[in-house]
Image 1 (cartoon, rainbow, N blue to C red):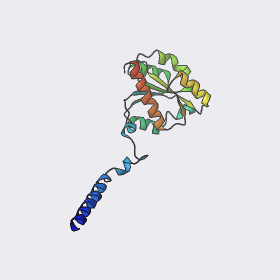
Image 2 (image 1 turned 90 degrees about the vertical axis):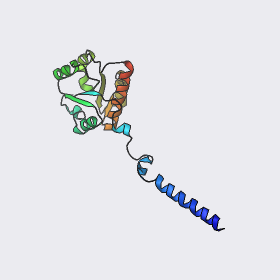
Image 3 (image 1 turned 45 degrees about the vertical axis):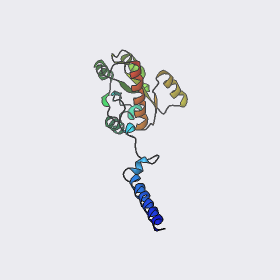
Image 4 (image 1 turned 30 degrees about the horizontal axis):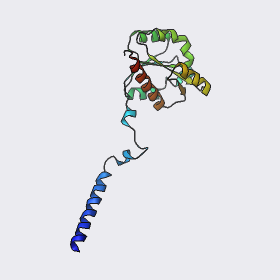
Length: 172
């Protein structure tokens, strides 16, 4: 009887110890919905980004320091241009992967974007657009975003644009 009690105590203490070890370091990050996945904190593919913001109120999202800081922390190389001549100079450098631009400004610079040697992916940003406007923009530009959007949506769109760019074999 004593040996049965001793075996039970031994098994119980082993279960107690192994259960404590299983919930030691990082147990809160393993719970569903907690913590940040590494893949979301850092870009899967680092992009050379150009943000075209002419300073209009619609471009306020693109010129926000919060978005720019998030993009830099994710590992993207960022260049901000404010007029057509700066954009032309950046595109002629040949190492632009993605261009973030306000949809309202896209008409004036579309010729520059289409003639760029690096063939960047265009991510137009629509300011308070309706569902129909967003759907029309997404038919023409696959990665169009509607603001207000959080930084996670921007990072996701950029990652998807980079995947598409790599599938088409565009040079970076």
